[in-house]
Length: 612
Image (cartoon, rainbow, N blue to C red):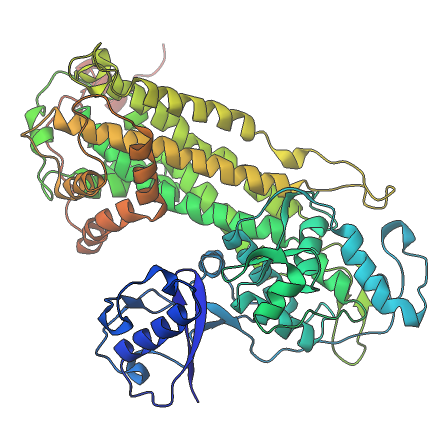
């Protein structure tokens, strides 16, 4: 009988379906019945289930489903993503973290071998101590328990899902010496959102992320704390029981297989990369609005300029600016109003966006390539090989230097989006630079407007300057000098995420300020795509007429950026511009001029005279 897994308010329900010709409406109502049945107060739902209006989306791809469609036409028997250890991407991993779909396992090859480090011996300094066969299970359990020594706040459920999904992916490669039974139990725990308590601090990034991965394994063993949408935080044993799951029982090598690898660094790094990519694209749109408000020119984005310095990121950013600003394609009344002003050129914060934003884009591409390679890499020690020889070899794939260095570089790169954005906010708020009311508000003095919003942006940029110090330049010897060089990649990943979040918040402030600046230029309108972005912002933040509580506005626009709604609004215009190969608009402007050399120099160049 087909079964379909339904996600309602952070809870997963399995609904059997005898006839796949039933409609999506039937499936939704059946899921709601089961949801309310398990809640003491019907989950806060007052209406009869059949009277409830709902929207249904596929987990994969988020496609909206029509309630009149039949199940067999639009759904598969359970909506899962296959994990094979070779093809997972950072985008997939982030979506798994959000709970958008579950995991299933294709055919897997694995082997278990009777001897070597961590299987029949102790660990680290005790690698030469041979363990009796009857104590091998205890050896693995002791390993997980003793290494569960992290501190700090637990990872969020989303980040713990990512960590667990990534560990499953690595084990699915078949080089870890894990049993299929243990792997299936891990997948069952993931699909039920039974998530271990994993403190965010405690890894030095070699030998892998031992402490956080040990906490992850501990919960799966039925020890320590665990969380699920159904139970909240409780003892792991009872959380698993509540979902009809059994704790894993470790076999030789399995404790080490579960805790040795770079998955903490890499899973957090995947989120940092994906968020950096999203905010970098939207930063171009926000800067374009600011340029319009400050009455800048699009001339600096001419393709011929950037062809002379053909960095891919620089060329792409300039193209985005042209697609958003070119008045011949999306007429801007604001641009027309100052076309023949006497300004020769714009400040660097506007004119140099392709050069500054461009290297950020190239840095993100570099980091993403490293992270995606790491996602699908075997990072255990020892590595178990299949084949006729069936060797198990000790190596160093657990060392986190690759993702650590990439994430330090990512933080340094993406920070620049906030640094340049804060300077544009200053220009918007400063009447001597913007020709707008001071701090973008009428009745200045009575109202402070964006004065402290700019201070907030400045403070976040200053924090980022400290956070951008590379953690991977540090190393401390551990495990009695056995592990004498480490990556410090865990901190590289966590601070990269903090830097990206600060960048998002600074750009949220700039976007609100730029939209407020447009209010003072009305009735003039900017280009069509930028007006669409303005309308989006105004759907959550009203114009600033007089002082009010500002933090909710910043949070609301930050959420727009997190959900990439600014990008989604402008994207069709950018793509259409790129696809139609429209000729560039080159309006006459004081910033475009030619300078002929003196006639004597021309003659001298064409007819060089011999030396006397």
